[in-house]
Image 1 (cartoon, rainbow, N blue to C red):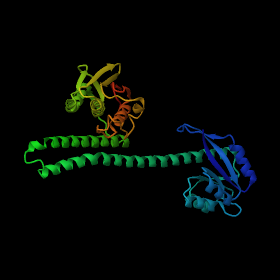
Image 2: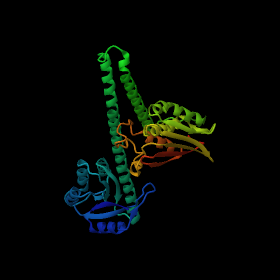
Image 3: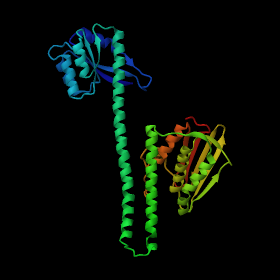
Length: 376
């Protein structure tokens, strides 16, 4: 249950008492909200007292009469607007006019409820203004989260690109000045390291592009029949050069053919992330086992490694955006912190699921289950 603080501002005691009685045990619920809303009710008979309460506590909703002794309700409304207070206001008055309605609306009043009003009129008005307040706050929160996500996105991008750019620039300057002599062979390690850094940057940029397309809903999907075994073989070929450097064996257990009706590019994203992590977080001379099978109307993809493994706490963070598990064992492994979160979004997009089993120093097993026929 979520409690909203309600302030009644009216100089008629009978109105204040009547509203309290109607709303005492009243709750508001919406299908899109997990919790119902109930009201903690305060009241006052003057605009001055209302402003004092607004300055000392958080008020969510105000039922505000205009004709008050001293400061009028419209002046209270203007004060709330001028001070940027996050409060929803419903005017309650017997003297509503077009001029007052326009002035009140321009100053942020949500609506009017004319006197006299019935209990049902009041309850309907409270449902309406509560929904309005909830949606307004939810919209503001979503905008703030989107802004924060954009900031984090750019921060990660700039941070992750800065180091490899500096490294490549440094190697190029050494070669330009021929600091190791004129023999090109003297620069082979620098060239190899530069190419590795550039490949890392390319991977980061591709992760970022995939992430933004999926998040914004602009990713175009091409659903058609294809042999998923061929996609899996291409994914192995892509990661093979890295596996050779670590002397990692990739074993596969595939059927000869398995037709899926889905987006082949999305399957490539899934396989590339599964295999990339299985190799990068493996140990020298390790093994990666990649198995594909069919179970009813589903395809099962299982990738097992003999790597460094993860604790339960680390597994909880695994699919969070921009999150990389940083330990002594992973500090030298490059990555954007986006790959597995992108993979999970793609899996969910295809109405599938992913399961992880891992033990530290023993290895990890990722199991993905996807329908053989995905819907656009």
